[in-house]
Image 1 (tube, one colour):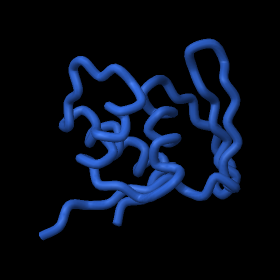
Image 2: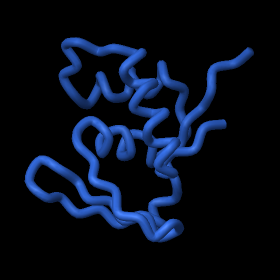
Image 3: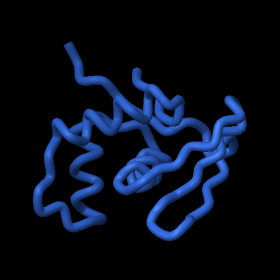
Image 4: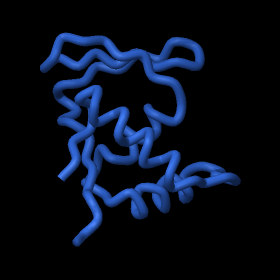
Length: 91
């Protein structure tokens, strides 16, 4: 069985605004505004160019940020939260 692949919903359906340490993301398709704290906005940004497996996403985030305590289980939990919010799709 292959690992699930995650991708951000279309950028055209999202409108993001930075508010101090938080990011407000309006999802046009649902009409819901989500309040995101790191690392959720960074995950969305990393998934914007292409769909990735959890391992590939962790590697991409590691290339862009100092992940001294990179934890794949925690990343998968954040991905599940973003899927439940409708901001990320799992295939």
